[in-house]
Amino acid sequence: MMIIKIKQSSRVPRHGVTLIEVIGTLSVLLAIGISSATIMSSVTKIGRRGNASVQQRDAIQRFATQLRTDVHQANELPSSTETWPLQLLGSDFEVRYQWSAEQGSLRRTRLESGQIKSVESFEIGKERNAALRTSENQVTVVIDTEPASHSFVVEAVHRQPALETPTPETPNPEKAEQ
Image (cartoon, rainbow, N blue to C red; front, side):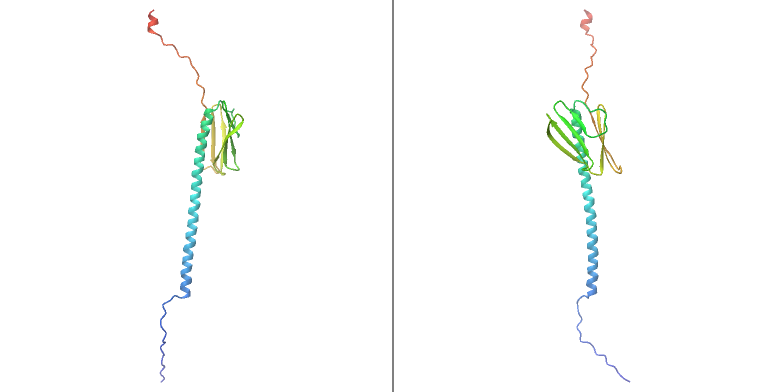
């Protein structure tokens, strides 16, 4: 019978990591990093869209306020029309509104004595459309999107000059007695 002796190794146990463990750890960290970057990108896009939407609503609100002021100050409104530009004439001024679909903006130009006094642009977005309707005493601008998810309707009513109506005279009791 033969006895085999197994020689015990004199190796000292190592306290390190193997290459496979390092690669596994790095791949998990890489996956977490990619997921984080994707989530951050999505959150940033949502934030930008929200900010743009707020800015567009602010521009529409400023436009509505300015249009109402200009229509109120105008001597008369243009005859019924549905095409841009809108031209409002006052006693000493002229205001023109023009829609630019390429720029997604409404532009207001105020002229006094034939000279440009001020120019203002209301950025409402390239995906929006602005339709104009006027009547004898009202200007309506409908600002919508394609496809129409929600529309903004801006109405401005022209002030009518106060008509002097004769008031019936009230009988004076002292005159009636005489």
